[in-house]
Length: 237
Image: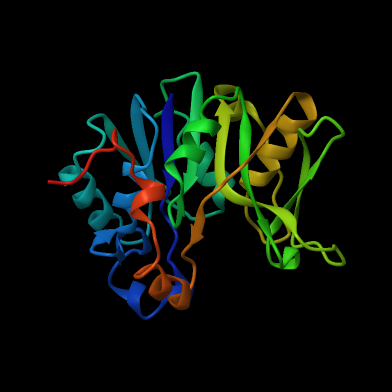
């Protein structure tokens, strides 16, 4: 299994802090956000990191990190959405299965291990404001039917997409439509795969989104070491 981390965004909601530092390198409790994410990964054969904004800084970090020896960065030359970022990795992926993560949220190591056990799937977490998230709709058997972005009129709580996926390599054969935002969305790849097969919904026990200044500041005192690191996790030296 290879892992892809999407780390090309500008982190506009975290300005002014991201004006000179890419969002994945903002420190949380003394360590770059990206360092926590990579340390929480299950064993992977190769790490692929999609970069664009302040890419040189992220690549300099990757050269020093000790978590995954076989890694490569992929430049998303023109940011055109998460789906485009995923498909830009087509030539770098070597495995039949790919774990894909957003580069700005902290997800429990145990949850990522459970996601890695399914043929294809998505991590979900309950939220009380469904109109602010991509919400998962499931079939009668509990598997995914579709993802709907920011639906209105739903009761709470609902299961939200938290940006962690397990894809088969055939994801690179999909043709993604251009969204109303003028981008290619990774959730369209999810919906297409769910229509053709059993796409599992794995409910996460730990999720700490870091999308705003307030969330980043709150993360400095949150309990993260236990959920993100286990005895087998690699600690930085």
